[in-house]
Image 1 (cartoon, helix red, strand yellow):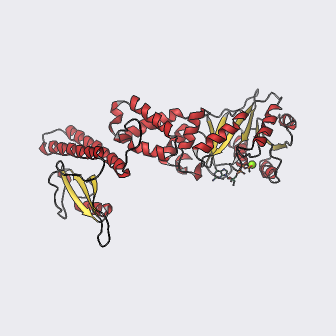
Image 2 (image 1 turned 180 degrees about the vertical axis):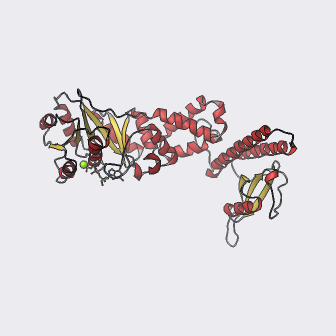
Image 3 (image 1 turned 30 degrees about the vertical axis):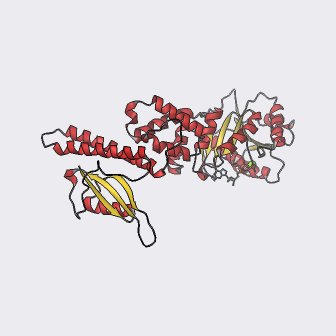
Length: 415
Ligand SMILES: Nc1nc2c(ncn2[C@@H]2O[C@H](COP(=O)(O)OP(=O)(O)OP(=O)(O)O)[C@@H](O)[C@H]2O)c(=O)[nH]1
Ligand SMILES: [Mg+2]
């Protein structure tokens, strides 16, 4: 293996020079800032690349680095630097092995060496990752460099630090040594572990003996009414069987609130009942007895408005029908974990069965959702991923949440 250095005013420029000289096959080993940008002086960066001897066809000569091993590194963070030079040393050793091999050596050995180099390059990438962040994560356990990427992603996602700490500890304890070798297998393991920690409720359909009665509760403006419309469309038109759906509105305080759902009911030709006082609630349910699904929309209440939540509670208490009501707490994914927790606590008097998270399209971090369901052990039933009725509603899957958490929300991967 040949080890070469290139310099430039930016790391990108140095990299471009390297690529011009040695082509795309080169592996980046190290990036260093030799000189800071100051008045009248441009910055100077140096990159170190490695390329296998047989692939090296120089176009423009640059100076060859004499020895990676002995080169002093000036940056802070001794542990990281030690690892970089260790990795570089190992690369050099492998390079020597590769150099010594001749035609009679088996292809198998070469493949092994290549594999080893790929692993080391990955290691170096991760060490650099941590190095550029300038500080090692503050934890009571040391995080190996292979875990740096998932650690950073999870932390940025808004996951509660204690949860992340715990998951890291579990991973370090139980992950098979073989999987620790590179960041891809670490990520795969971590993904599987997270999935197992996310409770979801699979959708079940009504039968002759039991209907499905679902009530959506939650703060104001989170998407309860829109989600009721999406669910109504789903059950009456989008499943393998067209179910009969009826709607109940508890939100009769605001002009417009009833009208919003009335419009959907008219469009989809659904029965709709309004309830002003709790004693009317049971009657409203009874009058929709012919339906397979009854969907109940409620007035949005600030999590701190005990009065409104109590009114919903009164309705549930006044339900002397045989119908079992599934209470779904609707929460936007765009609020931080602490607010989710406070909302959950305030609505928990209603005996929440599942949680629906809305506005997944409006957020970047998903660790808050993870932490809430992990902490409360309440399963997720649905995700709302946009304003469009009915298409922007999906059945909750743990894979989907973990995918969003580690790689961000991408509509094309979900639908
Ligand atoms: N981007 C985005 N917007 C959404 C989503 N779900 C609902 N909305 C929008 O959020 C706004 C409020 O939705 P509603 O369904 O009226 O909310 P609500 O919870 O019924 O509100 P109140 O009845 O006032 O408590 C509307 O503009 C919806 O289109 C979603 O998943 N993503
Ligand atoms: Mg509403």
